[in-house]
Image (cartoon, rainbow, N blue to C red):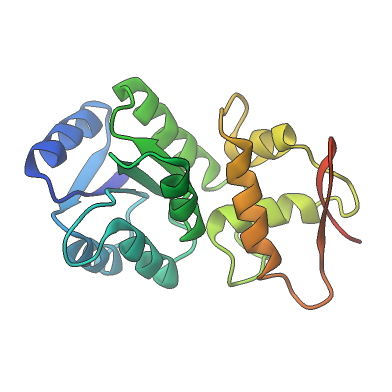
Amino acid sequence: MTEILLIDDERVMRDAFQRLLEGAGFAVRTAPDGKRGVAAFAERRPDLVLLDVMMPTLNGYEAAAEMRRLDRETPIVFLSALDSDDDQIRGLEVGADDYVAKTASDSLLLARIRKALARADRFSKSEAPEAMTRMEADIYRLLDSDRGTYFSYRQIFAAVCGEGYAADEGAIRVHVSNMRKKLPCGERIVSKRGFGYALEP
């Protein structure tokens, strides 16, 4: 059974999301704060982490960064009352795969979780710079599969996230910006307005 590690300091919210996830067929482990969430993650890797932002001991951003130092592959989805563009960008920058507002419907949250799980094994886990997060590595492998060819936002979403996935183009821009800092010496990602991104041959 697919296991989700749910980290949220609010007991009422944690219980409500646990019931939702278990009702959808997931096994759920919970942690009441970021520090204990990271400890639970280190003890046994879940299939996905669902992570609040505003928590004591370690906030969600700090907890996600700690988990990414341990493992770049496990999908991390933020679930937060903070839903501004800046909050979402910060979440992506620390290595999260997605960011969902707590005001989102149950069906949307479950859809985003299933998408994150489905794309986790979409590409081989090899042949991507070690410093990259899993999402960054997936985009890198896509660009690397046909160097010199431009991939549009839609093509990147379809290949990395799955057909029909709706996301802000800004999320891809953030990932690519982070990837550029982690590329091996001599490699370069280029962009062309109206065409998308390419990894130079």
